[in-house]
Image (cartoon, rainbow, N blue to C red):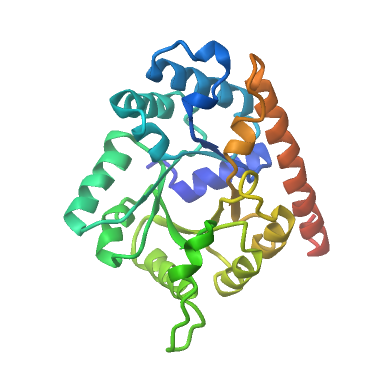
Length: 286
């Protein structure tokens, strides 16, 4: 039996000494000029291939966002499938699809994303409840990152709602529920919490010390990297997947765009590992 998502992720974190999960969010309008004349599928795959080849030794995972591929129609979907296939097999790939639907429809999504396309994990919206998540959670070797407190400004409209039966906010109820789902289903469960709200991230980590947390909002969204690391790292210096996209993949827009992406990724990785080293040293684990 092949290792599950959690073990594969842990192995890659250790191998690369990295918590960096680069988002592969292609926007052909932002591609370097030498890719502009190409058909959409060809251009996207060429762009993604260059980014992956330049950064694969620096990452713990990659995270393509489904929307950027669907925006290009059939060519974009074909490029997504080809991108999945070109990523080295030892590196986990998380499809950022924020899926959540009626149980029979969710089962079809799960069969497509996990079965046909062979992604290692997905992001999922818990709003429709357990039966909308169950088909994804039933895959024992896969991962499901449940939206908990997202990085966008309007996330507070619902996610910060106070509730009355013993927990402060809805996002803490979601986090608590994710722990129960981790216990009751064979898939590996994590949370999504943005780097734009490190104080909330700290509350979530205090309540859920074990669950891995996918951390968007670093880079283009101006999330506080150091405060988020301090709030969200586990005691052993793991437990977060720092997930920049635009700030890395569009660090340059010339013929050397992949090299500039590598430079940006490496600089961010050094920042992350500096905090990790300080944290583990203070905990006596270094």
